[in-house]
Image 1 (spheres, rainbow, N blue to C red):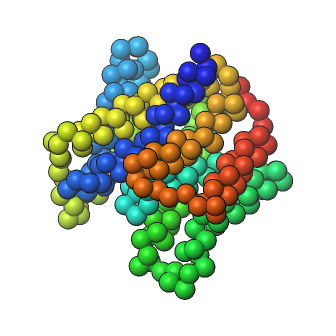
Image 2 (cartoon, rainbow, N blue to C red):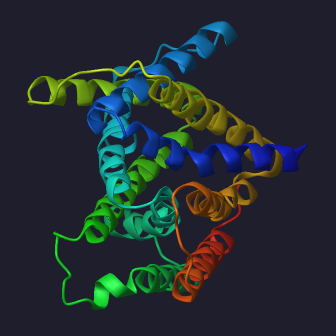
Length: 295
């Protein structure tokens, strides 16, 4: 049963980046696509809460926290991620984002004064080395500049991962106070969407929607499968086997994403790319294995 749940999460999250690339093919601004995605996902979660009779009344201070969480986890980081996907194949986007565990550990030390154990530091160094190898041509090139699409994509995804890690740290603090995760995500997705709506309203971005089959299907897939089902099944997995073992799903999602990029986006493997992927996965394993056991 747990193996089946693992497969569901792997497929849902590993393919989500490929789904994002579909949305970028249409005349809808990335910021607007993000609004539609998380408004729909939030609506689904609220319907689930109403159907199950889950608590939806919380102190106003929690709503302030959800506003911050929505900004970092369902707004600014996805803006960066969508722009990163413009320049990179979805597999590389997912691979960079898989270093979220490393960023979370390092940002926990920088902003929340959490101690960093030596194995975790080593894992972070290994993961960074893997990224450096994958993008070694751009790093060593004399043409390193913001004019390079690959460089733009790389920097956008580093920003996305950085902001997401701040969101994960805020989420961790809320879970430590026993704030229900499903309601937390419902409100955070809603507030993240509303922040983006406010920004779009004061910008020259057109608030549009594409009714084409591919756009609508990708939107439903990202909202329902990647955001609601994927996360819900992951929580079930956490309850069954513990957060430490469940978090290993983050190691293997880049493999699914890179496979899809190979099949559908003409991603070509190289020996340096393969070594880089192995190092990033190995770095994530070190960090996750070194983290204190939970649940």
